Amino acid sequence: MSERGHVSQEAWDELEQLYHLAIDVASSLLMKNSEFYPIAVVLDLNGEPRFLAAGDGTDFPASATVEEIFRETFLERKNSLRATIIASMSASPRRTVATR
Image 1 (spheres, rainbow, N blue to C red):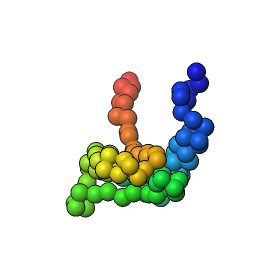
Image 2: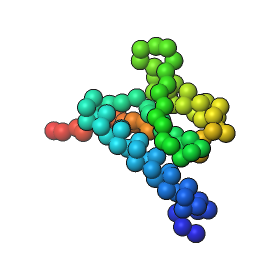
Image 3: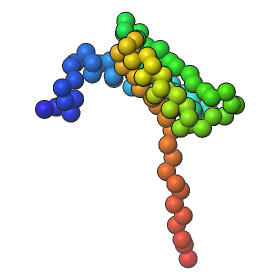
Image 4: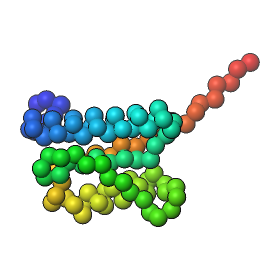
């Protein structure tokens, strides 16, 4: 069994398309702003990619809130979507190295 498991070539290609779209946008936002809110890309039933925006009505919603809104939206639209992806930043805590 390959790393794809039982995923068809068509489904794999669609997932790769979403992945590359999300990475391209995330990379551009990182280069421009040094950060970004989570972004979502979906494929509709016609195979057309769409970017989604989400918020909770505040100026700066928590990333976890935005991600949850995306997941809820995916569930609500599950019969009209072929594939979905969320790109989100994560940061590792900085390590302090003691020196003498």
